Amino acid sequence: MRSVLLGVLLILPLLSGVVVAHEPDTFTVIVREDRHDPAEVNLVVNDTVQYYNVDSRENITHVIGLDLNGDDDFDDEGEFSSGVLHSECDWDNDTDCRVAWIFVINDTALVGNYILSDIRSDGTQIEVQLNIAADVHIENAPDIGECFGDCEEVEEEIDEQVSTPTDLRKSALLIVGTVMFCSSIIFGMNQINRQS
Ligand SMILES: [Ca+2]
Ligand SMILES: [Ca+2]
Figure 1 (cartoon, rainbow, N blue to C red):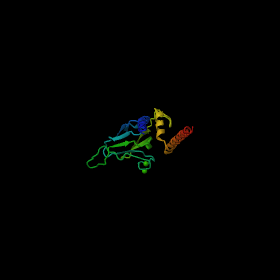
Figure 2 (figure 1 turned 180 degrees about the horizontal axis):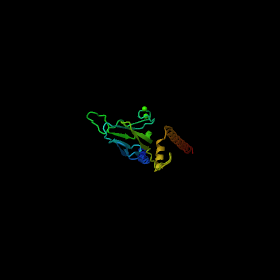
Figure 3 (figure 1 turned 45 degrees about the horizontal axis):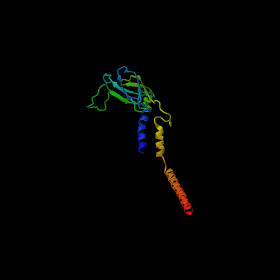
Figure 4 (figure 1 turned 60 degrees about the vertical axis):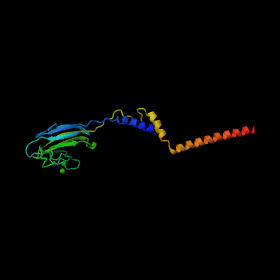
């Protein structure tokens, strides 16, 4: 049992090494009065993008998001947004005020190419691009059921482990039967010896 456990423990790092994960990155977009720098961002799932508003025009705020139905808001099904982004905040008096949208791409359902809208409080808007790719890097993964590494030994160990009570009972019966058979032969031979 112990050796089986050890075998499994030795195999686990091998299996986990098959899928090579992408190191999460963080991208920064500067939201300006007339444009975003950069205007297009390419991400992989688990990355983060942060949109910083530096448009310091008085009383002008930005809301960036996905407006799927083009009605100039972000409250419809499947839409998402930054919320209102100010260029500066007085956090002592307004803890909800935001100057940046930190968007963590932590869901594979977000994979896709999006045209986001940056809608300003003066009614103007621009479009920017956000491309999110799946984080899939499978390298030389064996087919299901295929062996890799030193698996012959492990299979034997697993076979040992999966001996069922029925198998054990059969073995016990076989041993008892053999012993009885041998005993009867010895007994019979003794009888023959005595008679002769
Ligand atoms: Ca909408
Ligand atoms: Ca709407």
